Amino acid sequence: MRPSSPAIHPIYRGRLAPSPTGYLHLGHARTFWIAQERAKASGGNLILRNDDLDSTRFKLEFVDAMLEDLRWFGFEWSEGPDVGGMFGPYNQSGRMDIYRATLEKLRVGNYIYPCTCSRKDIQAATRAPHANDDDEPVYPGTCRDHSRSRILGGKFNWRFRVADGATVSFTDENLGEQKFVAGKDFGDFVVWRGDDVPAYQLACVVDDATMQITEVVRGADLLVSTARQILLYRALNWPVPDFFHCELMLDAQGLRLAKRHDALSLRSLRQQGRTPESLRHPGQKIFKNCL
Image (cartoon, rainbow, N blue to C red; front, top):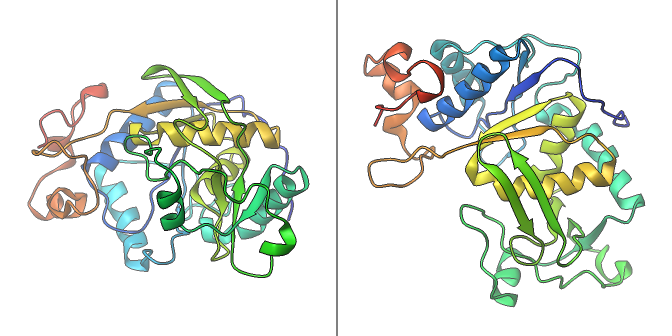
């Protein structure tokens, strides 16, 4: 199956895209609630996508818990894995043919190249630190000029080629003007992993584009990922959606919430007798006094 050429839908289309790798916590709830509020304010639609590509951490029990916790909190969506819709499937694991077709389009366009470097290799080869809250170190370009015949016989990643010094700028709907420089803030990035699974950057762009998402609401820790994804949109000649990055929710020690904060998971809070109404506030001042 080949991906269609996405066109931005005239009606606002937002999305929730949780990963079933643990129980949803208050940070997820706040970001998702802002997405829902923005969809409602625009008279648009909210789509639920199950980002279940991480087979090493994915558990079926977390999918059921995710749906249950989202509905308990008050989320409503018009399309999703449980209700269907015209842009399905809404489980990423069911969209592999679309990802493969997109990868081939990038390969034919010479936007990507095979790379045998491990994460340890990259960290040892460069002194450039990765951006704050970003988990991908700046790639030094080790495999850019390798002969494919030397690489394709073994395990490798497909990596997107980024022009050195290229600047990616965009206006975030919440945080304003953003600018990231290739080679400083990010480098050539993985779009397909050596275990034959699409990387987050590719899967996210393909899904948001083919599901005709008009605005992506997510955490500020993904600002650098947005710069990478904009380059993918451009390479594929697909419309770039708007972006709204939310400030991260922190715990009492000043660390951002993660799935390790089980005491602040929606499931734990519900078991403690908390209600959705007690955890949120009207508008975008929600969760102000949760911690």
